[in-house]
Length: 260
Image (tube, rainbow, N blue to C red; front, side, top):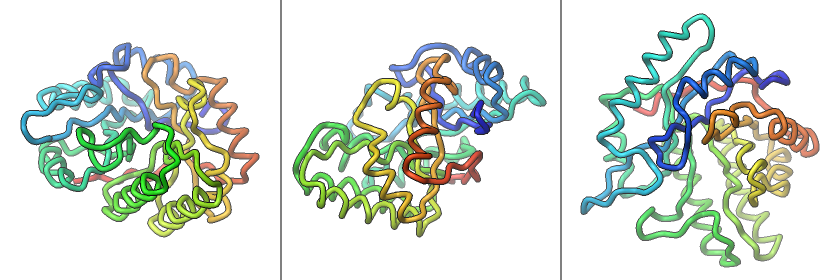
């Protein structure tokens, strides 16, 4: 970003219930740190059965205000910063069609894939929980591959979120499948700066060496849940160092795909 990466497409708002700061505070840091493009991609509403409400995403009734706010700021800062109104979404096969139907009226500029749960949110497992079960790893990878093939996603956020602790050869086998699919579908893979700053299990260097070997392309994403995390210099430098160590090409900007 400040080191030649002019864009960040992974920015949240308080509507997701675990981010702080208003949109203009995020914009202020983007401008201060020399960004030309800022994409807001808050956790999408999802339409679940039986009145289930998620605890970590905006609610359906908040979507209209979200898009109105971001697009109003796009007009306000025109000429200073390109601002886009996107979303971060999981791929839940049983409910994905209903999600797309819901989003049509808002016409999001793009959607990034962040597969936080395997199978589903309310009857599945969190992707970042440690596991040595190959079936969990396999399902995670299968779900990402299915998502890539929909053509709805601009890029894959923190694809290495899965916290597999079993044999190295099994990890490599399934992550190779994932990376080969990403390459086939021209799906950029995100080196996630929140994972770096929060010292999570990702970014996982094993994954990035596989991705580089396959010829995938990367994008660096702030995954900002507070304004100061937008293009944060320390995390950005570590993301760049990881990319250089692993030999993966990092895109400065990405081509946005409209999901609907």
